[in-house]
Length: 166
Figure 1 (tube, helix red, strand yellow):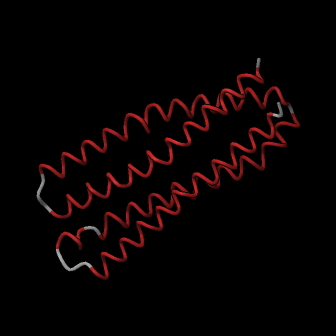
Figure 2 (cartoon, rainbow, N blue to C red; figure 1 turned 180 degrees about the vertical axis):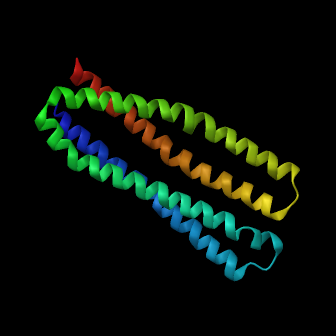
């Protein structure tokens, strides 16, 4: 098994996947512009700032992750050629940390944030609060969708790393 090719393929799949954060960020910003230009009611106008903030956050996340993974792809070959065993061990440690972050942040904290936002929708009747909560739920759903598929890929990559490490 060529672990360098496996690592490179995984990182390229991550680049493709994380670019969807950028796509959704642009969609949120377009929605913001739509609410700004076409919003006539208080509720529609209340979405302007939350969708802009969510769009900017998703763009920042996406650009940061794409940049990180592009840098990682470029560094893989040099690291592997320097010391293949150390490369595999370093990747295993990095993947384990990432999987732990998924468990705590993505699959525990984000659902809690969604629940809190849903409660805000139920109990607060101000348009800005409701728009912010709905936008938060939409943004968190995007993050769960993208990171859910990323978690599956990184688990498969981790299994391949473990096989090579044995």
